[in-house]
Length: 291
Ligand SMILES: *[C@@H]1O[C@H](CO)[C@@H](O)[C@H](O)[C@H]1NC(C)=O
Ligand SMILES: *[C@@H]1O[C@H](CO)[C@@H](O)[C@H](O)[C@H]1NC(C)=O
Ligand SMILES: [Zn+2]
Ligand SMILES: [Zn+2]
Image (cartoon, rainbow, N blue to C red; front, side, top):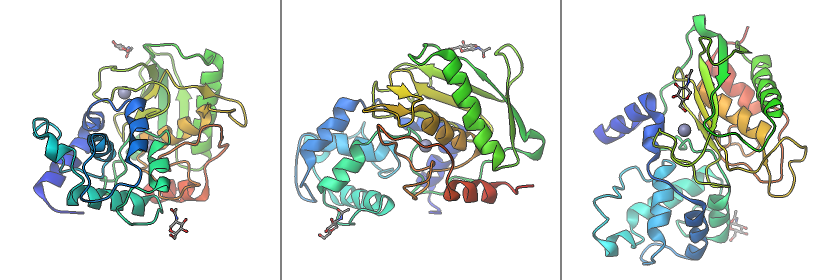
């Protein structure tokens, strides 16, 4: 871990207030505008470069970039500088792309995929936030400010199944309780700004986010085209996949670099996942000893 004051601040923020670090809204419009950046590399200037800087900062690749101080200096903001090149290389390394620092089509395509709102832990190590042994039986309740298009029974059954898949491979057991009962975890659907500085962005872009132990908060973007069909269907987002992924964060898992892991940061529209993979299981075993 980089022992440096700024990184330490980032790390503490992530640890205690993870959703506060997500920054401003990245709407899907701005993800689409990344398409115009294809072919650019260090030394270029382009009006959509601030969107790229925002994207890389939001997801953990450009932590020293301060959007507010650069707001009045368009030249600098629009300029593809050394720091941006390093961030692009780090992103490419993380996603198994050619590490060129250049915005080739594979890099832009990867950045345009819908993904989890939790940053990739590339520039710092997330402290191993864990549930204590007296908290291996976790209760959860639903509290949504918006109702999703999916029928409530489908939501409950799918979420219960996602918890079961983690329970089968870990020390944990889970139980749904009414919102009025004491609970360790709270799950809900929300739209746009919903009180935690990780505002949602409508269809695609960011799909959901969740906090590490022991905060226990999981939010879904109500505007996603969630599906419980297998396969999900054209343009649809598999609700089981997203649920398994976000529950992984609730238990303390970070993002995996294995594209086949449920804990990989992106979700492919139309595709579904029915279970954790070996990398996910190895991860939860590393975090908590299995019985
Ligand atoms: C990496 O570069 C090689 C050679 O230019 C190319 O054939 C390959 O498709 C590239 N891979 C990706 C993921 O862009
Ligand atoms: C449910 O969420 C709302 C905000 O959306 C909050 O005001 C309320 O306290 C929550 N209810 C419980 C029981 O936690
Ligand atoms: Zn995630
Ligand atoms: Zn939220």
